[in-house]
Image (cartoon, rainbow, N blue to C red):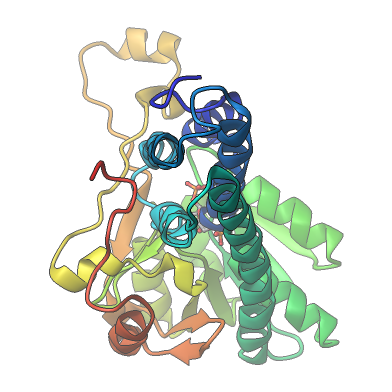
Length: 323
Ligand SMILES: O=P(O)(O)OC[C@H]1O[C@H](OP(=O)(O)O)[C@H](O)[C@@H]1O
């Protein structure tokens, strides 16, 4: 390990996030925070950085940059890195190491608590006997449904499979384990089933300052259909999903993934010369979203900017940048 090459656990976590073995905005954030703690332990034990606080700090910044470069859309990833690096302090390597490990632990605990708290808020929106429709797999959205079940409400679910990676299968399995009767449908059947649904519950990868919700591709179409059918739609998103850079006019980059997720090589070959595109996320305009459910309560999307300012100030530093 040199001061620019992160330790093995960081490289492994970065690879797992890039290949989506580790996925879902909250899970990515907690894996990134834990990887920084592992980097701190490794750097404090390595010849090059163990006795040089400046080299230790540089190795932490390099590790954060490696993690940052894995996936561009879920803002929980840079928010996690920011949380930990902003709390790195001390004169000696041992003090620096301890501050990083403590910040990483605190971040992960805060994440779990936030999800429990927003689950209660989201559950309050659901009534006994409701059927919910889900899209993709979101631990924040599942927390709302599971909390409703724990409140003693009987909830059933229509689960969209979510092409191309079919994260709906994970949702279906976890809801079934929570005792929720599940009907799995293909994405294109969603509008037909909305007539049988009381609420649509989705997660978010990022929330923009204007209340736009960036979530798995297909969310915006689902939201428009839900509005047309008169079905309320909420996004469950703890505040690490708030995108501070959008306060200063930046837009959220939409990740484009490999065409191999959409079409296999043989079919591709047979069809001949065509373009294939695979955007992983889309933006649901605030007017199509009824509520953003966070650990601080529920918000109309248009008012989320006030919470964003309160939590992040006017913008976002990048503590992983070289000074
Ligand atoms: O943080 P939680 O609620 O678990 O997940 C949030 C979102 O992350 C997922 O993205 P991907 O599957 O990583 O591309 C989905 O878009 C999901 O709604």
